[in-house]
Amino acid sequence: MKLRQNVKHFAAKQALTLPVVGQAVNDRLVDLHTNVFAEKADEARADERRPHLDDFFDATMDTYVAALDAGFPEAEAREITHVQANFDFYNHGWTEMMEFPADELEVHYERYDEFFEAHGITIDDPLGEFRPADGVREAPSTPEKLDDPDHPHAEGGFADDVYVETEDGEVVVGGQAEPDEVDVDEAPGVDGRADD
Image 1 (cartoon, rainbow, N blue to C red):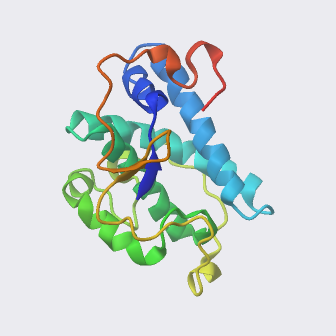
Image 2: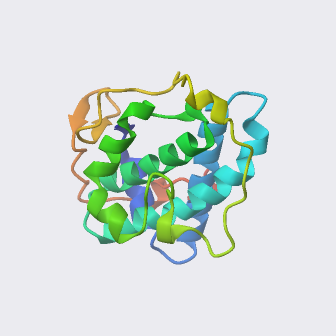
């Protein structure tokens, strides 16, 4: 999958595990992801999906931290959560929101199969053990879209590794090296920051 990566991603990585600040960053990242993917949804369906997306992305923040704890670099840990989201979009028939084509689902799963299996994550159960005890609010599915999937936001051909687009537009396989010094104040949500 191709992702973007900049200093804000490394700052968020640091901030998510801090007391007080971590929750603010978590909440802001959830809002950002919900907004980005709701904008990719069919306009008539976006609002009805928002509560589900909020709950789902909140759960993937725990996945992200667990992947970091397991030794994955920032880009791969974040890619894992995006793969989970794409499994969820596929399961709901929300193909217009997917970041890679449906025929790459298995390949993306296989790249992280050890982590996914350790946490009970499957294509059919994208959250596995990270599913909240009180569940995830549901939203109507559009299974008819699976018969002839439309992927206007999907970028295929990046299933063999994590590809990172840097701020200057360069594509780096595997992601960038983490900076020696990271200022957590750069993380979305710190001090009420509203940027992404």
